[in-house]
Length: 347
Image (cartoon, rainbow, N blue to C red; front, side):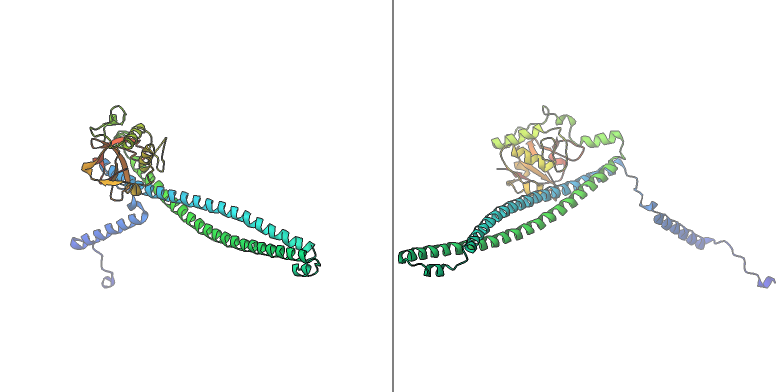
């Protein structure tokens, strides 16, 4: 009977044991991953959190400028569509008036018995009357022919306008979809940034919101006014306007006067000087003469990041006034704070 017994299983030892243990740990790790706990956010240092938040705000800024551009195109398409509709309504009124006039002529002919003008003339016994009525009938026929041609022309023009309005409507819908997409990106990026900021202590959050500049510089009286003077009166007015916005909140998509985003602030500042700037950072950079960093003067637009996604108004002394991001009001900051991308002098 002993010969038929199953050999006793001995516990693994040595390399075999280590291999089994490794496999077991790998299996446990796989199970953990499948359970979802492997996707938990890693613990980050405050510096790492701030770096991630900075990146999210930068991406939100890029999406904001795209949103601003799509919003501008949407408004333009809506305005063009309104103009087309107004013109179509005016032309429809003229078309209906022409049709009514032709209808009146047809009705009058029917009521007169529908006698052909040539036959009516043939029945006239007075030669002088015959000649007069013949000349009148010819003129009336020409006038009616012109009226019919006019109706046809108005129908063709109206059809063209309606086709153009249809194309503009489709364009408007494309811009609206693009607007909604960029809006969603902005909101998602900002929400992610807020979730990360919620991990900071109150003291760390306050330090982050204060930014790199001395908080005292946010006051009009202590904000740096460099030795350089604005190149002209318009630049001086733009700078003065920017100083007047210090402390106002950042709101993405805003152009003042109670809140601003970065390009909304620079646009409003120069608008106060009678200069119309485009709406977005990537169009504002081409709105004037490019200048080097060494040539900067107060009133110049200074741009940051490779995607030209942020802009400020240079005020001298290596400082600018800008609308940084949500939670950070319009303030004075050094232009060294962000990767410099270029500068433009508005003429």
